[in-house]
Length: 308
Length: 308
Image 1 (cartoon, chains in turn blue, purple):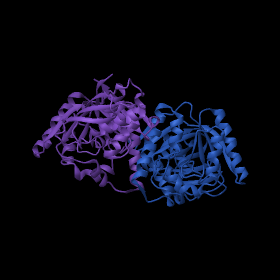
Image 2 (cartoon, rainbow over the protein chains, first blue to last red):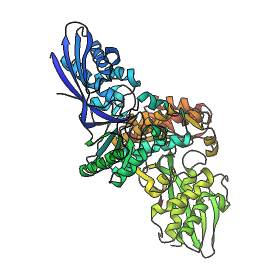
Image 3 (cartoon, rainbow over the protein chains, first blue to last red):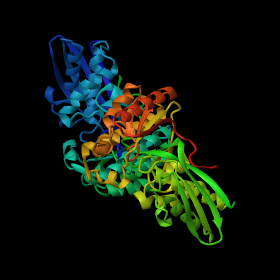
Image 4 (cartoon, each protein chain N blue to C red):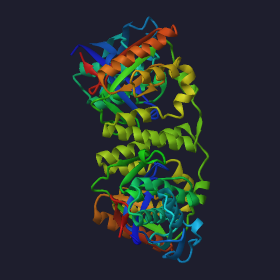
């Protein structure tokens, strides 16, 4: 195939206590990448839309082009690529924007090459791209590429475990118009925690995983709110976090946590109607504070990235 | 009922990375308590057998009598008790010996009172007893009382979650004749860990819980061995730990971890025959080192404490 368009969904990483080890793909807005093979080697980013001109267009600094180049290299192909990137996800919002660009580009490039590589073997190329913006983390890459909820024990395909998605898991998302660069969000984290904090965090992570298997949204939401390390350190970076949590609860949400490095917040709800009501409540919190925001109801995307 | 005999099984807590949050009851040796109601208030420990005279007979220092007295108090009964304690579990061995005495005594006392309390309401009395020897921890108490594998999110009944027991989970246990007092085992723990250690520990705990639900013994055993905090700190207290791990693996064991605060070691095996072979291999390690030991193959006890 000479021209391919691929979509990769946004993702929510961390889910409270599962910092750096858990991520889930979500339906709706995502990044779209067009890829066309060309005879001359190299990867050119011809256009980026939807980013208000904020993303770097140099090939070596954009995750889409880095991932595409890595797939070419991995497949041993000596041709080049022209790439157009359409950002559907806001930057620095905690929705895995850089990962989605990389995943869409890797999938499209691989399709151009006649699916030279099995899907899970696109992980290294996507990770290489993610590393240029936020380090070697698969917690956004893996769910965007593979879909569902993924437990990340390492950066190899065999270390990515699929976890069950409760049928009745609905999500209410709100993204305030405030940048939280991933690097800054990492800088505010403590270098050490007490042993008691570690025990509490392992307990919350264990309950969260158990709740996914038993489809117990009450335990799930409680566990997601039981992060005693990362959210407290980052809360200063998220405007209106306590107010949003109260508003979500008052509207029937079961628990609210920070999506990735924030500032997107995510509330767990048990019906689609409830999720829509929580969306309205969350939007009102930011409107009252004169902070622009995007809010929507969504669900876990079981399939992940796909060709369009 | 005027006279009751109850049995409570030994338990394995921690299971590697799930320090202080996970415990499982195991079949076989346990503690047995005889309880007889009497008109005069107070609780008297009339005899203790099987402990080589090492346990305190003062009522306020023995977990069986403390638990029995707490059940009487909780039930609002003004009578007293005579108690005989038969230790089937070795002391300070990492098999929940103090918890089993408390649980057997609480169950027997409650039965004497015509089951005045539902079983899960015996937790506080057992915890009060356990606190006199090792602090407020339910990770041995809960599985001994309730059976199975229990995730402990707190000290109340609603915070004790049951986890599934894989059918093919067999265990090989070895207890070398070396005391590891729980207090000493706690003193050697670090007060702080790095954030990276916390992430690795939550990852291992999450994988361990997922593996119980998917009955994947390979992932389970790997996760149990992935404790990067507690075992490294305590390994100096367990003689022959590296040798035992190698021997268990060579005999077909899938992974080996420290039971509770040790020195008992536990290897995961996928058949009963394999567990017996690993028992032989573990016994040989300690015999070669001239350290007396007890070793046996066992399985998870799904039921927990019971009347005899």
